[in-house]
Length: 313
Length: 313
View 1: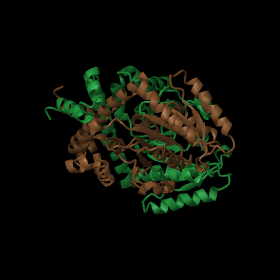
View 2: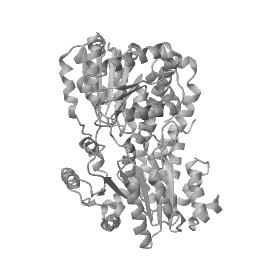
View 3: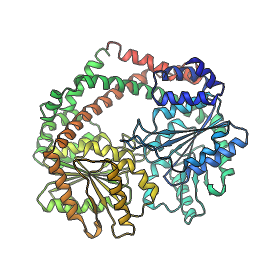
View 4: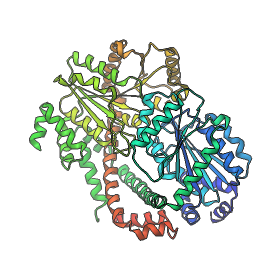
């Protein structure tokens, strides 16, 4: 394993891919991999690209890959596919377009499912980002076909969150996004050749005003990704935000906060696994019948188990 | 507290409202309330109404309230509002229309936020449903302004899930729903006077065919909720599904599975709370600095804490 990790650290693409596959399949090596790579991480700029389905996120990411690659950066991309909670299947759609970069040694693209935590980013997304970070990538894009949870989750992983909106999506949907407004560092109004672009821009600015003063004021960009329009300005904003994070107190706070969340998530995951095992042993048909007949209740059953698990604390 | 619970059990609306407020605010009485009510629960038919924003779910729910009330049922409604993860604010929109039922003693309507579990249904949604169930409601509608997680969560609470779609929502969105298809017991194509209704119906049926054989074949209804069109047929399907559940093996299995999930969720919540407390004590600035400087890693830190917590198991 250490040999494989060494090769990945030296930038060997196939070894990197192997490592990601291992953590994705929850291999028992996961912890060893992550522990060994960890000291090498923390150098990449992690950029989340999120927004409604159909907003053109893949095309946008594709153009950004280009720009950053051309400026001499090593680029990693994680494209998160929404999975069915039942089949675990993933949707690829126009992600395929991105694959033309796949032969480029300075670009590494990986598609990952979101199964594991329904609707949200799975733990392997975080792990894959850390692998790409440790193994010499300068910038990592994480594209989430975002509805709901994954848009919130991306904030926990990314240094910079780009929220992609499009004109003419209907008020309801825009309103729905109200909460999500607050997670974005950069706004992108894509497909800006469509009608209604000024209105969306105005709405976003208004929402930002309502959100109050912050030391980083999220810029609002209009782009037409397909025609490469507005990409350069967006690139500048992404780089600016990275610089802002590296010199500001907020940047440091954000990084530290993320470390706290990382420990927390590992803890909760491990404890959940432990609890599940215990519960698996205890959920006998008799107990379920007792619950069903209302002879006992879930609170009493859970309370008893908790006492056992945490007895000595 | 027992007095308040007794009054609620006898159907006293204001006492029921008080209980829901208590669990919503995570009062220390929550466990007592839930344990006392639990033996009285299990009689109501819980119906989830979910679907994209703008699908007309509130209008549909409004019409269904009418129909069931007129057939002599006591109706409870929980309208779940999407909250901003930051402000906790809730969107009411055309929910207000429903409020005309509020003066009716046989209809109880409650708006609840989804804060607590981001994007998903909060634990108080489940608890409120159980309160309404215990306190004599025959049918309970839970309307979720569903994107992402809440549409998956609704399956854990509802006996019958109605998925509301509309024609002309764009292919991307429909594809996104692929996973969600599998949670629905009844499909409703609302706003059926719009163009493209046949196509959506056909798509849904195709998706159902692909999903394979099940003993309950989800019916696909076209409705125009605003004009009351198709509501009667939908009402029949809802009642049919309730009957199907009460006589079939699947109904029993589903109820038992839900009990298992209930215990599991309480367990995980309590353990998360416990872990958080422990972690709060341990996350000193020194430790965070050590993490930040890569002198240690989250896996090692979490591992050490786990050992402490679960030492004697």
